[in-house]
Length: 110
Image (cartoon, rainbow, N blue to C red; front, side):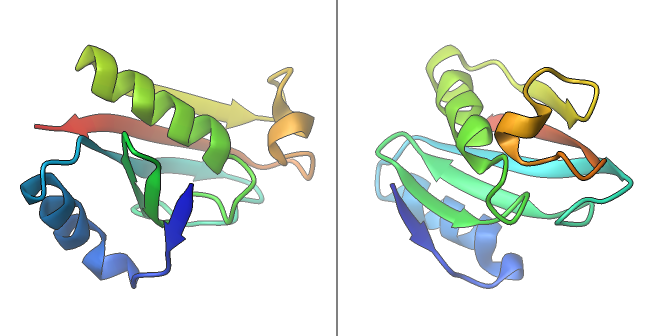
């Protein structure tokens, strides 16, 4: 996957441009955080079905899981609310071993 370093305020514009170019696009948005979280609520990540990424929801530690969920949301048309935290079995795997928790809403751009 290629990752675009576009400024956060440009993420929705870039996602719209990708959509206009015929890409399938999903937007992931941090909706809640607790404890040690790398990105604040409101942070966004745009993901295309072809593997393009722009923005950030975690500084990298959960973005692989979020990108997978985004691809699933594009395929099914169904939004998802993802909850990552130390209580999850995957916490160490996705990089939240320091005690953080984050909720990310993933929705296909239609």
